[in-house]
Length: 210
Image (cartoon, rainbow, N blue to C red; front, side):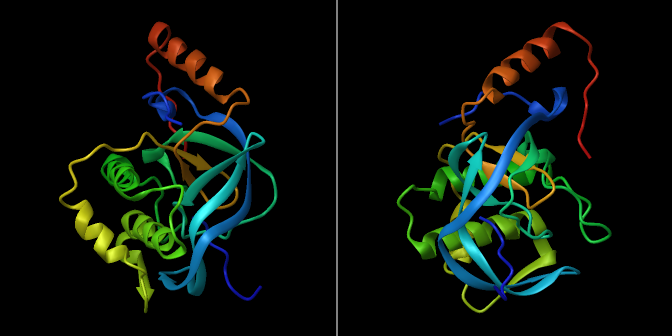
């Protein structure tokens, strides 16, 4: 297509990554609503990218999300992913990016989602939120040439936002990594309960995905 296609219900407050990742099947269907932004990702890509809400199918259920991984190309294939604590995504792109945004950036994205996300977002609003997420995750490794559709305004508001934050999880796999705010039915929720129970009653060994 000539342009890099980059992506853009509540979850129990479990720390998924500390007890093991949950396998899910993920397919990116489209990015809509969206705008084309001109981005620069150090050591990876410079040019046009679709910025907006990523329409995903997770365990066969359509789900809205955003891309948290400007370091990898997206794919429209159905692939095996892992559902993890948001702080433990996205995966690395070495030697440029070591992977895993950490708790502070994950908390910022959760607050941003709580502040700005709406199912009726316009294309420009969705693009602003996606660009803001990329800027949070990648920091100085990411920049926008030209119109940021209001991402800088969102980040300014985020600095003083004191409202509720969203409960989010990361999806990490062979394509781009994503953030979603719900866990579609299909076994994942039940696995979370089982994993959480096992963590409380069994070993104190924590598995961290890398």
